[in-house]
Length: 193
Image 1 (tube, one colour):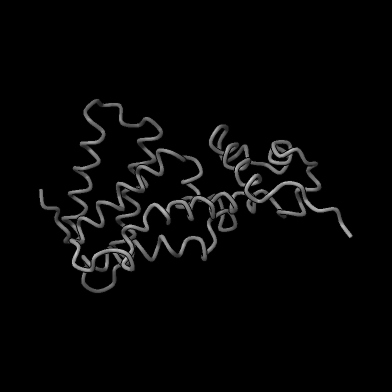
Image 2 (cartoon, rainbow, N blue to C red):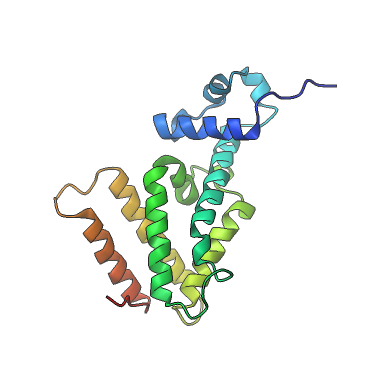
């Protein structure tokens, strides 16, 4: 009988995420993760076939965290009479706050280096469902184009913010709210100020 693995899944995921946030996604390798958890690299292959499987573990963990944060906006828990713009604003702010806490790992949710490194369907589904439900309450017909636009703008803004790309001065929070207002108006969900 093989010896039991001494590194828990939680320890493994924490090490992957720590490496990714400190040194970048490219620094997550089989050898760097094995060293971080105190095992030999060949032993890590029993847990993951390649580095993109390691990245998927981190992406799944991030998707679960974001889903938990966004749960207040799900159609199951939200007031059905709630203003769609309020729900979408809450989702946008939640995503921005999450990206600020885990900028590199959160990128795996939207721009993973491969399909194998992206979150699994099961992990991504709750946040996708929350987003589609929120957008569908504001947009007649197919919510997918609006949901894609909404997500792409938020992720793009957050990516630029985390990279320090807003160098022209001004208030970045104000710019976020301005862009969010413009986006909500474009999809027909105006905020009441």
